[in-house]
Image (cartoon, rainbow, N blue to C red; front, side, top):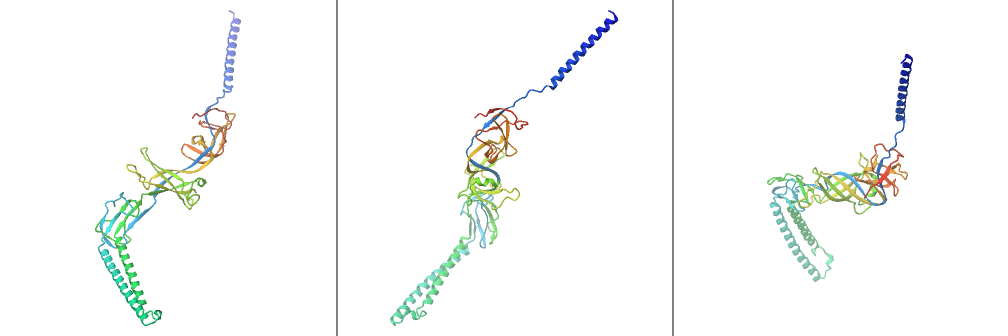
Length: 383
């Protein structure tokens, strides 16, 4: 092959390589600049319809005593007996004797006052007899009885009557003091503290035991002011309060549940959160046999059953974001943001009165980056 032919062959090979390389880069450029095919995400939606729903207001709080009292002696005497129930944690019934004081001197006083009453009754009978004789003398002498009250012994009769009244008052006072030698539980209670011992001298004002009532406890909870309209409050908008469920969650997953009711509305807002404060009564906190008691100091969840809301929507809480917003899928399968008016809710659902229409399709599937107008492929939730 001549030198000219070799040169032409080499040039041809180089030209072919250049063309192939240019074609390769051109195809890569086309691949890199071609737009990716759009992917429409499949989502689950919930078709909502309005219905009448009970408004449920949820809150948390700490259980406190509805009634507690520190008992002390009303007179000075030595303690002669202390009830075996008078220990911290002991349960006592209303009227049960707890502490007995030495009542010997007070029984003697009662006996003395009873004797005074008998003497005063006898004196009054004698004076009534004298007064009757005086009246007969006035009539026999033909004098008008009203001419001389002293001669008719009316003042003496009044003194005898006053003496009897005084003696009876003294007897009642002595009996009251004798009753005070037995200190009784004023209501069903649990003993939280006691300092009484047999042989100890009790004096007026000296605290001997502290009791906490067990018939009812109470919880003060904070709720948004706008939710008050949904709650029945005695003395404000109803004769009876809204029923409430009070639950104390235990560490092992168990729950202590008691029934209660709204008792009152505290007369001022909570200073930090500016929320209203409701007082909820907890009935039968100790429970029955074999049940765990609910005690003061327990942290509890409260669900208050309020009024019925007409035409409200139930929306899963998981479908909400930023507190009061949700996504709705329109007729063209595009996302639309809605701001809702939520009047109550729990950990699962919220109750909505504004922002939705019958048949709206609420987005349930969480999307990584949802935007207004985004196209989706909706599927209605079953069940």
